[in-house]
Length: 254
Ligand code: ATP
Ligand code: ATP
Ligand code: MG
Ligand code: MG
Ligand code: MG
Ligand code: MG
Image (cartoon, rainbow, N blue to C red; front, side, top):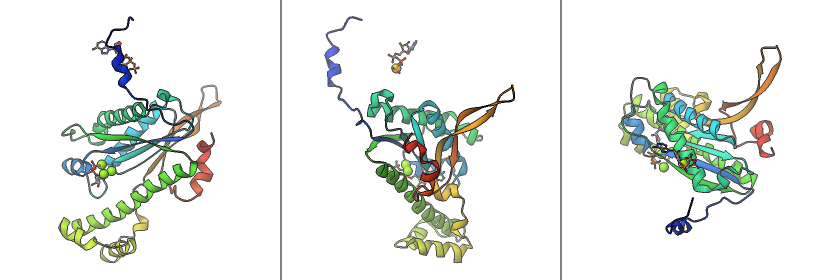
C-alpha cells in the first residue's frame, strides 16, 4: 500500500522491547476488587468460586500463550512467567502486558456464569497489567517467593479479621483495631484460642495460592498405545523452599 504523508507519526511510537535473555513476568491485578468482591457477595475471607474463576481465566491465557512456562495466582492477581528466550511479539513489553491482561479480563467475564451461575457481573471488571524483567534465575524465584509470602501474610490477616467479625460479632473497625500491631504468632493464637482454628489446617490453596504448570500426561490411543499430551495443571505448593524447584524446575533450563 502506498504510504501517506501522515505516515511519519508512527515514528513517535517508542521502542519497548524487553532485554534479551531475561525472565519476563506479566502480572495482572483486579481494580478495586475489595469493592467488586463485596458488591458481588463474595464469601469472606475467601470465595472459592472467585479464586477458581481467576484460575480458569489464567488457564485460558496459558492455553493461548505457549511460551508462558508457569503462572502463580492469589487473591485478585495472577503472574505469568514467559520463558527467557521467548520471541512472542518480538518481546515488546506493552504488547505482552496488554494482550495477557485483555485475554485474562475477557476470559474472566466469559467464564463468569460457570462459577457464579445465579448472578451477572454488575459492571465490567477491570484488571491492570504490567511487565517486569528479572535478569537472574534467583531474581525470578525470589519474585514468586515474594508473591507467595504476600499471599500467606494477607490470608492469615483476613482469616483472623473475618473470624472476629463473623464469629465474634466485632465490627470491621473493632476487628482492625484488635489486629493492629499484631504479629503472625498473635493471629495464630487468636484463631486457635478464640475460634478453635488451627491455621495450619486451612487449605493449601488459600495458604499457598495456585501455581499453574505444564505437565506431560499420557493419553490412550484407539490402537491401544499412548501418546504424550501437554496439560496445564494446578498445584498448591511451597515455592519458597527448594523442593518444588528440584522436582518441577525443569523449565528453568528447558
Ligand atoms: P487495587 O485496585 O489497588 O488493586 P483492590 O481493592 O483490588 O485495589 P487488592 O490489594 O488488590 O485491592 O486486594 C484485593 C481484594 O479483593 C482483597 O483484599 C479482598 O478483599 C478481595 N478479594 C479478591 N479475591 C477474593 C476472593 N476470592 N474472596 C474474597 N475476597 C476477595
Ligand atoms: P494483529 O493481531 O496483528 O492486529 P489483525 O488480524 O487484527 O492482526 P489488523 O491489521 O489489526 O490485523 O486488521 C484488522 C482486520 O480485522 C481487518 O483487516 C479486517 O479483516 C478485520 N476487521 C476488523 N473489524 C472489522 C469489521 N468491523 N468488519 C469486517 N472486518 C473487520
Ligand atoms: Mg493494590
Ligand atoms: Mg486489586
Ligand atoms: Mg491484589
Ligand atoms: Mg488487529
